[in-house]
Structures are given as structure tokens and as C-alpha cells.
Length: 232
Ligand SMILES: [Zn+2]
Image (tube, rainbow, N blue to C red; front, side, top):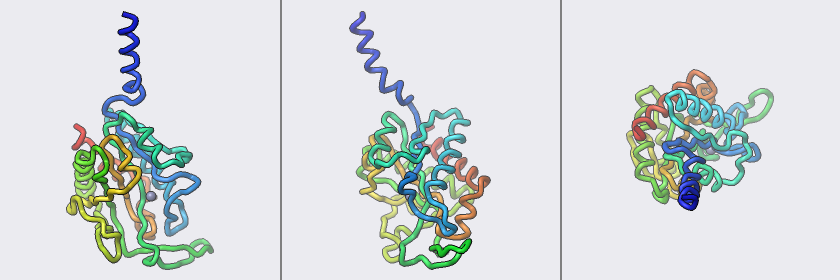
């Protein structure tokens, strides 16, 4: 009985670490390398952390178990992120977008010269076919895109353009989902995984929207709706 008890204990440990059905929310970037600098000079990491926390709150309010990864800004090893999510049902990386360097212009804000690009706006979603759970990840990304569109947000679509984007093929054009097979954080995930770019923060107007707590809550609610659609 003792031996059997121990065996059960060992089997139970990984489940205890991450409850079944957990949704892992990964805050993109970290304090030492905070991603894109917005048109007004704010680091992407701060946008990612704020939105990820809102999504975390929204999902918990709906009775979901969540795991926030990298919110303290110390997660400096990319592959450690999906590892930290081991056992989760879904991995959602939260980011904010830029565009190609050569498309950016210069302006002065608060006495500092900054880079901006107002040409593009909107959200985009990415999945990797090298991710073990990519088909489910794609189903979730499509649901999230559809929920965002229903809530009044628009897919950016420019990442698919060979000239002004990166020629990233659509996985689901209508819902703004692309393939990005080599993306480390997705291909290393053992569970269905997707990356969400909520908006383009080098765009001066969109940056203001993304920083608005009311807009952020609407985005979080739409993403939660999409997740509930694929993980009922
Ligand atoms: Zn990013």
C-alpha cells in the first residue's frame, strides 16, 4: 500500500503544479530587453504586462485557472516560458506590434526624437506548425480573432504582405491568423500555443487606444470569449 501510495503521489505531482485546463498567459519580453519602443517612448513590455494582467483577471472572473508568466519582468530565457507552462491547456503569448524599421518616421515628443509609423493598425495572431498542439492552437487563434472582430477590432493583415510585411502566410485570413513556424516561444510549447499582437504601438493613435484601460478590458473580454469558444 505504501509503495502504491508513493506511485500515486509521484503521478499526482505534475498535475498539482499546473491544474488541468490552466490557461498560461505569457507577458512578452522582459525588463532587460523590453521589445518595441512605442511612438511616445513607452516600452512594449509594459503594454504586454498590463493587457496580460487584464486577461488574467477576466479569465479568473469566469472561473478559469490561469498562470501568468513573466509579469515581474525577469523572464530572460525564451524557452523557459513554455517550460514554465508545462501541463497547461493553452499557451497565449501577449505582445504589441511594430512594423519594418524602414517604414518608420521621426517626430519629437516631450523634447525627445522618437520613431513612429501610422500606416498600419490592428491586431494579429500567430501559430507555429512546429508546435505539437498547433491545430488546436490555430482553432483558438481563429476563435480569438473572430471574437475581437465581433467586438469591433480589426486584423492588421500587413504581416502577410511580401513588401511592407514579412510575407507571413495566412492560416486564417478572415480572423487575422498567420503561420510563424520558427517562433521559438511557440515551437517549444508542448501544449497548443499562439501569439497575440494586440495592436500597433508605433502608430500614435493606436498606442493611445492600447494604453486606455477601457479598451484593454474590451480586448481582454474578447480574447477570453475566444478562449472559451475553443476550450469549452
Ligand atoms: Zn513583442
